[in-house]
Length: 623
Image (cartoon, one colour):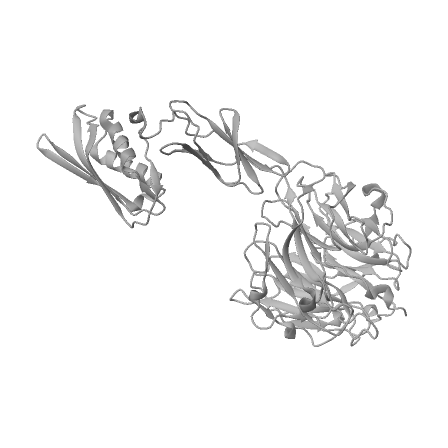
C-alpha cells in the first residue's frame, strides 16, 4: 500500500474567532507585515504547526508551535510558546516552562483546551513522528498548566504508545464534565488504531478502543486523515466526523449514543475529485443560520495537487448535503492544496468568513471567502502570507488580524509576523484643555491603531503630532477657542472628537489682564514629598448676612507628579470675594478643586480655613 498518499499532509485545527466589533461589510485591509519573533532554524528546527489560544491566562491570544527536522530525521524540538502582548507584539514564552520544555518530533495537530479542570488552557499535540519508511510513529505530547501559572510536560499522563497520530479532536464524549480526545492513528508505529482517550478530570487519560466501531481497527481499509467533533443529530452529544484518505472511499459520521460509544452513521457526500481524493482539512460553522453546525471540507487529489472546498450543510439527523454550488463561486484547482481552513468574522459584519491556507502554492495567494450574511460566500484574496497562518486579535481592538509564520530549518530563520487589520480609527474619547503660563495644552486619550493625530482649532488644522498632547503657543489672549482631535492611521483620519469641554477665553498668567483668570495651574514635581501653602487673603461672603468673611487658608498635600503654582492659587482664592459660602462648604470646595488640579485623591489634600472673629465667634473648618 503506498504510504506517501497521506504521510506528507500538514493541517492545523481551524479556529473560530467570532468577534463582536462592527465594521462595514467588504474586503478587509491589512497593514504591512511586521516581524514580531525569530529563532535560529539550526537551534529550533523547522516549524510544522501553529495554533492559537490563551495559554497564560491573561485573556490575550497566544500562539503554540511545533517543529520538525529538515530533512526528516529522528530528532525532537521544543514546543514553541509565543505570548501575545495585546498590542500587536509577541514574545518568546519559554519562561513559562516548569522544568524541561515538552518536545515533539513531527507534530501534526495542536489542540488547546482545559484538560485538567483548572480553568486554564492546556495543550495536546498529535505527533506521528518520523515521516518516512518505516513510519515508526511517536508518542503524543500533553502539556498541562500548573497552579503557579506555568506549563509542565505531562506526556506521562497519556497511554504509553507510539502510534502514527495524523489528526486529533477534543470533546466531552461521555458527559462527565472532562474533555476527552480522539486520536486519529493511521497505520505504522506500534500499530495503535484510532482511539478515544478518556480523561479522568485531572488530565490523566485512558485508552478506550471499545468506544469506537471495531472496523476502525482495520487501518488498511478504514483510513481517515482528518477528524472533528460536532453534534450532527441534535441530541446534545458530540458526534465524530472522519475525513477519508485515498484508501477509503467515503468520509463518515460516527454517532455518539450519549455515553461515549460511537457507531457508524451516514456517509458524507461524495468527494469532489473522486473516491481516491483526500479530505485534508475541516472547519465548522453555522453556514445557513439554522442553529445546526455545518462543515467546510478541503480536498486534494491523490497526488497532492489541486484543491476543492466543499460546503456541507447539516440535516440535523446526522446527515450532510453538499451545497457547494449554491454557496461558493466556481473554484479552480489552483497550485496549493488546502493545508487548513481558518474561520473568523474577518470584516466584522457579524457573519463568519473563512480563508484557506495553501501548502506548496508558490506565489498563489490564499483565497478569502466573505459571507454575505445569508451563507453565500464571495471570493477575494488574502494579503501575501506563508503556508502557515492564523486569524487572531493581536492588538485587542476587536478586529481580526493575521499571524503568519515561516518555518526556518537548517541555515534558516524561523520568523513570525503580524499583519494588523486596518480599520477607521475611533474618535479620541476625551479632549481636555489646560492653561499654562504661555500656552494652551490640549491632551486626549490614546486611540488604538492610531499612528498620529490631527489637532484642529476653531475649524482649522493647526498640527499633526504622534503624541497625545499638543501645546498651542499661538493662542492669543482673550480669544475663545474650541479644539477637536482626529486620530489617523494608514486608512486616513477617523471621526473628529467632540469639541473640547473647556471653551474659554485664554489669558496667559503673568501677562496683562491675568486677574481675569481664576484657574489653578501646576508644574512638574521636582521631588518634594509634602507641600504647605498658607494665605491670609481669602475673602468670601456670608450667604445669610452678605457681610464679608475673612479667612486664613492652609492647604497641605502630598504631591505625586504635580505641584500647585502659587500665583495661580492667589488668583484662584481671589475669585471667592463675591461668592456666598459657609466656611465648612468652602473648605470642601477648595479641597476638591485643588485635588482635581493636582490629579490626586481628595484624601491626600487637606484644607483648613480659620475665619477671623465676627460677632465674637471664630470658626475653623478642616477637611
